[in-house]
Image 1 (cartoon, rainbow, N blue to C red):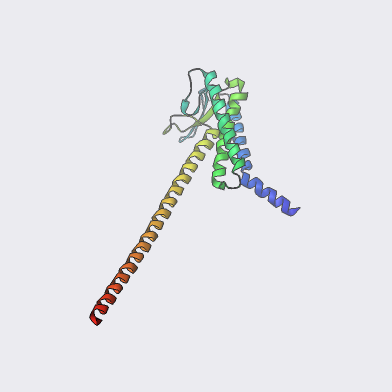
Image 2: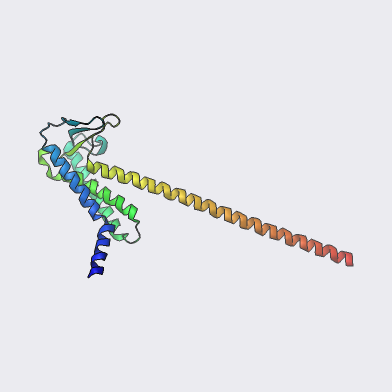
Length: 210
């Protein structure tokens, strides 16, 4: 019984479902707090100097990308986000044994972000099904965002770093392999030259004896 519980806890940890639950809950709760803060759309709720809390509704995708028609943008986002989410879930299921935990965590964060914003577009009729953004780093970033957006961006950076690290490791391994091969070739060439010299010496000695 104890072994089963430990095995189940290990699976729960390595599946990163807990990560999904935590950040999705934070995203939903934070948006509800912002919507119930009494601010009008675009209104400032708090200013902490380095970051502002501003209630903004985004009918489009990230960085304001989308069509002029909010309904069309909503449909496109839902379709694209659904396809990506289903694809990632399928990959997590199919590759669960061979997939690195680091990569798995990143993909779970992407799913969290996609579903967090999908909930806005499906259920928040009071916001005209737009995404609720509220984090405003106005002094260096021109777009408001939310926890769901943060999950996707952080996961993307983590994956980029992971790919770069792999590329560097592969390059170092390739370089080391080439050096070993060069040394082996040099050693083989030296042995060949030694053998040639020995053959020449034997031939010379043979001529002198004759």
